[in-house]
Image 1 (tube, protein in one colour):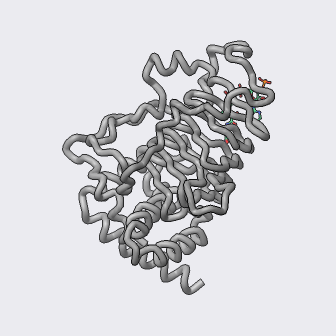
Image 2 (cartoon, helix red, strand yellow):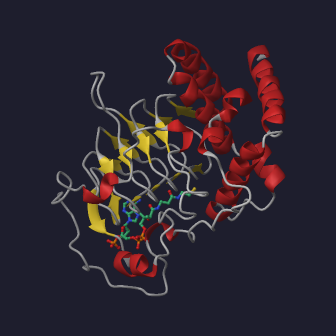
Amino acid sequence: MRFGLAAAAAAAGAAAYGLTRPGVRAALREDLETARRRDPAATNDLVTILSYPGLHAIWAHRGLHRLWQRPAGRVPARLLSQAVRTLTGVEIHPGAQIGRRFFIDHASGIVVGETAEVGDDVMLYQQVTLGGTSLQAVKRHPTVGDGAMIGAGAKVLGPITIGANSSVGANAVVVRDVPADSVAVGIPAAVRPARGAGAAQAGGDRAGARGPGGAGGADGAGGDSGRTAGAGGSSGTRGEGSAGEAPAGSRSQDSSRPPAGSRPPAAPAADPADPVDPAVLVEPALWI
Ligand SMILES: CC(C)(COP(=O)(O)OP(=O)(O)OC[C@H]1O[C@@H](n2cnc3c(N)ncnc32)[C@H](O)[C@@H]1OP(=O)(O)O)[C@@H](O)C(=O)NCCC(=O)NCCS
């Protein structure tokens, strides 16, 4: 309890310090704008800042990921990430590589493993696991492409790829690659093309279409050098042909319904006068 209060006080002090930096303010604005797009209930920025544990966990992770990249920082990063888990219910390993505009709605019970790679504009709901199936110290967690949505309770296991702009249904268990622009539901998840995927892409209105062009031209938030998420478009070598897979176009098309995952519009262009500097996205190292 005392540790929690101390951690909260340290976070508040670090946040106050961080907010004196323009780049941190720009990153905060981007995160709040993402919350507004992703959650219709996020109508008041102050309430969002104070009450969205998913955002708190993401802010903490940016700093912890930077700490993790220093050999001497690994132990404190692990310990602090456990404190963050206690406070938020979100366990993101500090080694995980997370892109920009990541959003976790109703954050609780989230686990993101050490070698997970998450692209830009990815959204998770509560109780999602991006977990491993191997005990070897190798790439053993999923890669999630830009614009993917993973529904409540879904488990995505192993070094598989969820392709860009794909949706994983609530409570699915995904153990094979999911190609880009697909929907995966069930246990084990069966994959089908997303309804209207082609049309939506042609219209360029997919949320995962790196909205602001990397907001200020920056990409690779959190100093994620070598991040490969988003390469999922070429995946599917293992996942296709799953039992029960619905053939493309086998469902009647209902034009009155939005495409899978009810994706919000792409993020607006960043304010060029106040770009998000990728270096400052990790400044919140001081926030915790
Ligand atoms: C997977 C999902 C994206 C599919 O959206 P969609 O493309 O609009 O698909 P539909 O709702 O038209 O359903 C298509 C088919 O998949 C089935 N289906 C949808 N979601 C499913 C799920 N999570 N698990 C199993 N089957 C599912 C439907 O029953 C339907 O089956 P049918 O073709 O036999 O009738 C969506 O259903 C989903 O699970 N979203 C996650 C949302 C979430 O977690 N919300 C939490 C808010 S707190």
